[in-house]
Amino acid sequence: MSTSIVAAILAGGAAVYIYKAAHRNDAAAATAEAVHLRPGDLLVRSTADGSMGRLAVVDGATRKVSAVSCNRVYAAGETVICLRPDGPLATYQVAVLDGSLRERDTYPMVGVPNRARVSSDGRLVTWTAFVTGDSYNGGQFSTRVGVLDTTSGDLLADTLETFTLTRDGQPYQAADVNFWGVTFARDDRTFYATMATQGRRYLVQGDLTARTLRTLAENVECPSLSPDGTRIAFKQAVGGDPAKGWRPAVMDIATRGITVLGETGSVDDQIAWRDDRTVMYALPRDRDHTDVWSAPADGTGAPAVLVPDAESPARID
Image 1: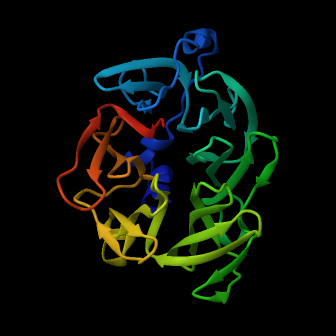
Image 2 (image 1 turned 120 degrees about the horizontal axis):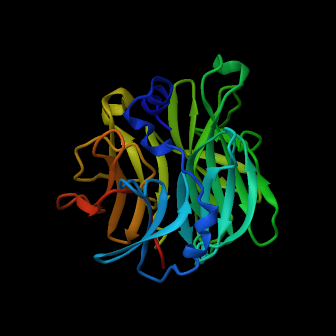
């Protein structure tokens, strides 16, 4: 989560595109049963006029819009997480859907939807929400992370703030610690996330079983683990200063070497992987519309529009 996005939400700025309310269309839910995710498909949230907020399946040049609406979506292993409004009030829920976008279960969510991810086998889902009320934060937004085991229905974490944290090799505790933007490793135990404290942001590695966290890098947000598990894509603050914007970058986990990608615009999204060589992310085209772009993960080549009028992309394997 960047300060610019929070400010835009409070001020009604252009970055609100990520959080525009999706209107549920339960009467048309049967239409979604005709949609089934297949390997190679891209699942996106439409930002096109006439289908704003609805999920769409993209197969090459073919685009099929479903009846299901979400504020944020992600999918893997025949599991789809959909963050959406819960009725007419200003409340939200986590909906777990199957590969045909049919509802499997729902869970209440505290806060405004922000980020969502699914483990590669579809067992774990995670979400981040903006919340208010933390005493240290003067009534402004902070974040909460949830992690759910869809097999057992167990809530594995409703916050990461109770995990044991090590910063730069030393035990660390602070009232203002915030976490967001989780991504899972294939063992369903290791994960990566963003941690913020004292105005600084860190990439952290976590262990769901041991309930521990440790910092790996600074001035980055919203990690995304590559399909082969060797690299992490994230957005990196330009010159270490978030006020200057964010650039997509990829870190080699073994060497900690970081490659800045060819995108020159400021990317305020949790980057996803299209495959082991290519990443994808949303960029606003105007106040209401976004496009999904792709860029080579090795820093060569130029970025290009992958899916117009879309955001929140996920490749189906």
